[in-house]
Structures are given as structure tokens and as C-alpha cells.
Length: 143
Length: 280
Image 1 (cartoon, each protein chain N blue to C red):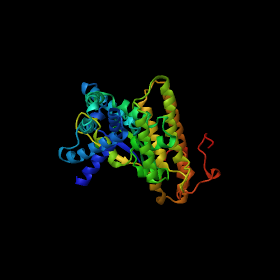
Image 2 (cartoon, chains in turn cyan, purple; image 1 turned 30 degrees about the vertical axis):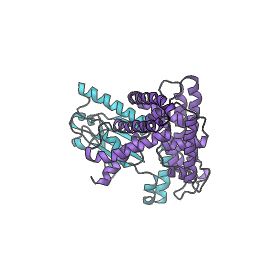
Image 3 (cartoon, rainbow over the protein chains, first blue to last red; image 1 turned 45 degrees about the horizontal axis):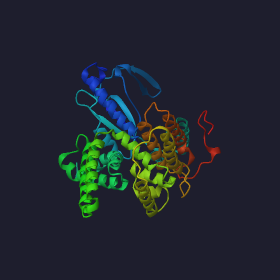
Image 4 (cartoon, rainbow over the protein chains, first blue to last red; image 1 turned 90 degrees about the horizontal axis):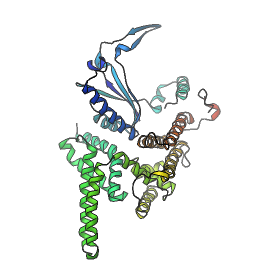
């Protein structure tokens, strides 16, 4: 199964990368951790995200579209980084996250979310919707 | 957390460490079967200790140490038994001292190298392609004999026997459990790539059974391919072949969902919508 693993933002991550010895140390530890993930064949993708001050949101309301510039207020709900992993089950994903170095100087949180796979969606889609989804999926080459 | 949750959490940690553990142990005891057994022993010890102590900071090293102690015990036991044969006692003594040292050395070695060594051993050309695939899925992929049997639509007894024979053949050939170097490496790498592609193909175009495709085998092959890519050094010319195979598997697997309908029935080529530019 594939899981998306989110590193939640903190006040520190929202400030951007600070050039401290602690940050350098964290990057080194994270590098080693990523190497482990790669060697285990678990990691499909992963990257860190710039603070939300670099981001934009597009709000939808009926036909209306409004662009909102960052930064965004609710820091704890923001994402600072992500991985995409292929694991056997959630237990394995949890075991991997537990050995991740703390990505932040202070307390932080990492969230694991399994992806919808093919079978999960079948019963919710009308035949027409399914055809469109299949077409899009084929072009993307995902599951 | 209930006792069951703790159990599952420990087993998940063990699954992550298992292949590397077996790889390190196999290099010391020169016996895949015994290495598997020792790794299993380490899990049993962890299951009895970790619920009290919590999962240690370096679970891999902890499990290795526990298994290593078991290995030393086993070697000692063997030595005691063999002592009755006076004529070889002296020789074994020297061997034991050597083995204990080898454990210390192996503990400090790069675990990644050992895993690569085990992959090369499990895919050694002295074994038949089928035997290589079964053994690789067992010791590297961590699949149970039952899972492998279901994947290849064979009986559990057949697969179990295939694995036992493969382990015996490796023992008889006295393989070193090390990744080969130089000219030999290129030839041996083809043997590894062949096994990974065989596993992938069995999933992609199932040769037996009712399922047209078995995506779990494809996933397992892709994972093995990614492992191999992660373990081989980036600048080595051989890496191109590893990435080539990985890319081939990725592009073929990307078409998997299109090949069968929700009911598992094949979708004819003419009814599929080709992604732009691929013509497939």
C-alpha cells in the first residue's frame, strides 16, 4: 500500500531554514534516514516544502475563485514536508516514522495517510465517472 | 496500547530489520537456514523484552546483538558436541575463536553491503531461476512460504522444498555471502536482475491460475529493484542496468490498472485508452 507521510509545520519551519548548528545536524540525520528508506525500497518520493509565505491558496465558492497569498495562520494544520512510501501495512509505516529524527527543533508531529487505491473507489463511482478517472489515471501512470 | 498492539508494533520493526539481520548473520555462520533461525530467535527475545523496556533506540543493532549471542551459543554447543571427537576438537577450537572475532567484525561492517551480499547469494547462478526467485522472496522480501506458493500458484510443500534445496546448494557451494567485485560482478548482477524481472513478469503476465495479473508480485519486484538501486553505488556503470530494469518495471506497472476490469476480466487493447505519446 502507498502512504503519504506529512511533516506538520511548526512556528520554526514557517520561519524558513535557520542556519544553526542544530539545523545542520538535523539535515544530516534526515539524510541518513532517507538513505535507510531508499535502501529498504520503501521511498517513492519526498521533499521539504518552503514556508507558507511562499504559497498561495485558491478558494472555491460555486463558480467563484479567489486567490489568497500566504502566509497562512493555522500553523499546526500546515505541511512542511512529505514522503510517498510503499509499505506492506500501516504498522510498517508507523515503525518507519518512529525512527525518523525529530524534523523540528521543538515538539513536532508527523501524520501518515494511506492513499485510496483502485479497489477502494470502485463502489463509489458511477460507470461514467469511472471511465473518466481511468482515462486520467492511465495518462498519469499511477494506480 | 494493548498487548496485541505492542506485539504488532514489534513485528513491524522486525520486518524492517529482518533481511539485514539475516544478511549479517549468514555472513558469519555461512548458512542461510541457521541465519533465518537466529533472526527468528532474536524476534522471540524482543517480543519478551521490548514490551517491558520499550523498543530500543537502534532496534537493528539490538536484534543483531541478541542473534549474535544465540550464534555464539550455537557454535559453543556444536563445539561441545564435537569435542567428543578428539581428533577434530583442536581444529574446531581455532574455528570458534575465529567465528567470535568474525561476529565482532561483521557487527561493525556496513549493513547495506551485507544485504547486497545476501541478494547476490540468493540469486547465485548455481541455483535454478525458480529457486533463486523463491529464495529471494523468502529471505529478502520476507514473504512466507505460503505467500510465495500462492504467488506462484504452487503448493506450499513444493516451495518449501525448493527453498530448502536452494539453501543446501548454497551451503555445498561454500559461497562467501559477499557481493562480488570486478568482472564477476557484472555477470552476477545479470543473474540478480533476471530474478527480479522473473518475479515481476510472473505478476504482470501470470503463467498459471485464473488471475490475469498479480499486482502484489509486481510490487514486490519493484521494491526489490528499488532496494538494489539504493544499495549499489551510484557512480558504478552497473547502476545504469539496475535503473534500466527499475524504469522498465515502473512503466509496465503503470499500465496494470488498465489491463483488467474491476471483475478481473481482461480489457481488450482496442477498448483501452492509450496515454498520450505512448502508443500502448
